[in-house]
Length: 326
Ligand code: SF4
Image 1 (cartoon, rainbow, N blue to C red):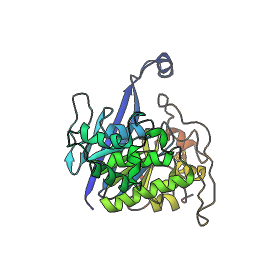
Image 2 (image 1 turned 45 degrees about the vertical axis):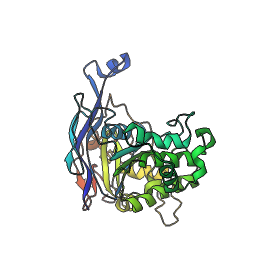
Image 3 (image 1 turned 120 degrees about the vertical axis):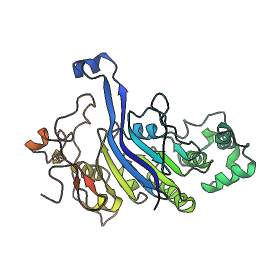
Image 4 (image 1 turned 60 degrees about the vertical axis):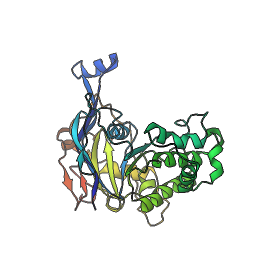
């Protein structure tokens, strides 16, 4: 399968600001490293889910890929062409080929704009011919909504319908890659499934590559081909969804799975609770950065950074004492 997006060793950092930050770092650290050495690949027609708690850096990574924040270091190519960076380090993806669906679809729609105007807007922004009524109806049909929705305003949409409009807007210019940031946040569980099934169906029909950013590992396991688990700006485990779900090696992955019990009666039932808060990026723990929250931490974990380990083709993790090897 041809590679759509390739990211090698990506770093994103923000300037450190504020008195508290100065106190925490003794004034030595001028930057906060939010994404630290992340590599990934997405093939045409594939879905990768990046999973982690808030503050893990996953949304920042997505924004850097869209060129919305600068990427400090790293090589990114799209459709096998290296992506250029602007003078301030922002990537310049072709916004017609790479689209992003934001977390809050209602908030990202103007309350004074009808659905028709919202769906026509991407055409105007990119200097295309004005979207015809037929195109608006085609986009509504693509996401399973009837033509009469074209005349509705955002306040007349349910959460699930607004999410569908968000998908339709993102797909208006027929991108090759869709980045969906928390596509199911704030939706009832039944509607979450609808939105994920919609993305999956569209992927099959259109051959889209999809990058899903989410905090919930369980909800994406049926739609993602691959998963990467992110903690404090790094991937701590990545692999096929099947490997990650059935054979997690990193305790953090296992804890994320436990935090969102799976309705599947055949799924593993052993729990591993996630305790404590995510440490500050300004004061990263020594050794394995997960040791302050890990039920299996040993002395070595507080001192030595775990090397990359492999549990089979494409399944990598960073842990001195991986699960199932104890
Ligand atoms: Fe836990 Fe140690 Fe593995 Fe880190 S290296 S995840 S602290 S067992």
